[in-house]
Image (tube, rainbow, N blue to C red; front, side, top):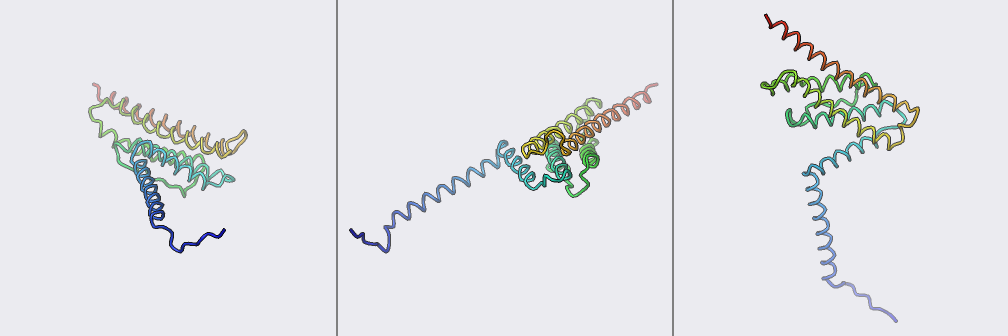
Length: 200
C-alpha cells in the first residue's frame, strides 16, 4: 500500500505547534523574570553565580580557592550592608594576592572601612552598641559567605583531610575573626578612653 505524499501539510498543525512553542517560551520568560525579582530567586541566582565561579576555579591551585572564599565573603558583606550603604558597598578585587593573610586583610579593611558612615547613620544609639552592631553585621555577612564557599569547595572534593585548601581557608577564617575581634576591642577601648577623658 502506497501513501500519497502531500507537499503542503495542513496549516492548522503547524500553527498549533508554533503556538505551543510560543506559549512555552513566554511561560519560561515570565518564570525567569519572576525568579529574578523574588528574594528566593535572587538567592538562587547568587548561588548560581557562586557555582559558576567555582566551576572557573582550578582545583589544583589553592590560590583560586581563596579567590572564591574572598568573593563569596565580599558578596555577602555587600548584601548585609546594601540596605544602609547601597548595592556593592565593597569592591571585589579578585586579581590580587589570594594568600590567607592577604585575603583576610582585604576582607577586613574593606568591610570595616564603613564603620564611620554606619555610626553617623545611628547618632541616637549608644556608641558601644553601634560598634557591637556593626561588627555583628559584617561578621555575619562574612560567616555566611565563608559557609557557602566551603560548601562549594567541599562539593568539589577539595576539602578532604590533609587538604592544603582546607588549611588555607581555615586560616583565613581565623584571621578574619581575629581581625573583627581586634577591631571591636580597639573601638571599645577608644570609647572608654574618650569617656574617661571627658569626666572631671
